[in-house]
Length: 402
Ligand SMILES: Cc1ncc(COP(=O)(O)O)c(C=O)c1O
Figure 1 (cartoon, protein in one colour):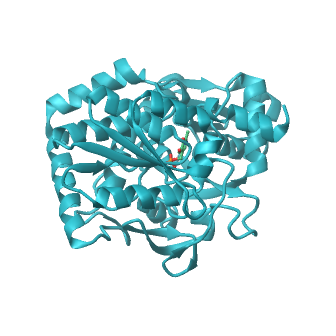
Figure 2: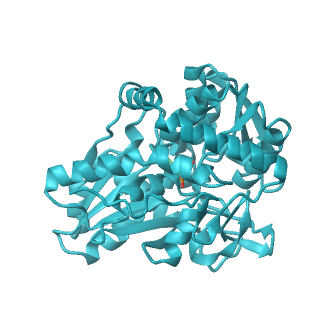
């Protein structure tokens, strides 16, 4: 069985997924984005680039990542079978390395002198610092002070890897402020710098480019699942912050009508508590943020709302434009999971399967754990386990008093 390519032409040449996406940037930046788009189009046509990336995926990242049948967890829940796509086993511990290698190779190809990015949980920061060390390009990561304190192991790793870490103390000092700060630095010299966006967000071509680099996840998973079970999973679920691990997983399944796709957002302390969740697609409205049109959580038009999630990588008031489109056309169902459900799933998976998930990924696991008991034993749920929880272990132990 092969996927048809109905969804592949998205976005259009102006970077739109239906009404979402685009390039909402000032004219001088539009030129920089167009240059990135042209360079991306060029390298993706080149066999030497494709070969180098494929080789790095195998020898450096450790791809293909396996799919693990969580038999004990499924048995305990007494319903559907839960399977995990083990992106947590990648070098640097999450899916982020997939697009960081692509972006670092692109920066080298374009002759850029510095790669800049934001990070929330620190996974994108570590992955980018790693890819830049490998490729030999200076790297600068902007990170909210709140996240710096919470995600200390990743901060230490970024320093060891030789990147310049810029603490961001303004506003809530989390992911949105880190994006603002990194973007300001990028604007000082868009000719010599590349802003390596950490998710399927921002102006065109980033939502497309990051999705393409991440789509290895779903291509592998679809083939692996089919080979092992002789059919496709009934559900495919992934957590959604900006949405890169979810788009990476969903893309290969978009044209498989039998496969239900579920994106899981953070409802934090409850969607009834404004400012204490980050369920952008469930609770937001179409708007504009960080150079794109997408669903946004806003206090007023153009004023992003405060957001919260126990998972630093998920507390973002915007979301990828392709997710916004997939929600509107009903191809992906978006659900949300609270901080508490996330913590429960984090502990359950750790104690029942011996796998400590990232708090971000634990949202998708929590959704699967919620629905599994309501489904039959021959229903299969494939969850993208986007990252490992080493970075969260101390924080969770403190919160739970372990
Ligand atoms: C392990 C992990 N999963 C998921 C995410 C959320 O990002 P995205 O929605 O782009 O996959 C992050 C972000 O830091 C992460 O570290």
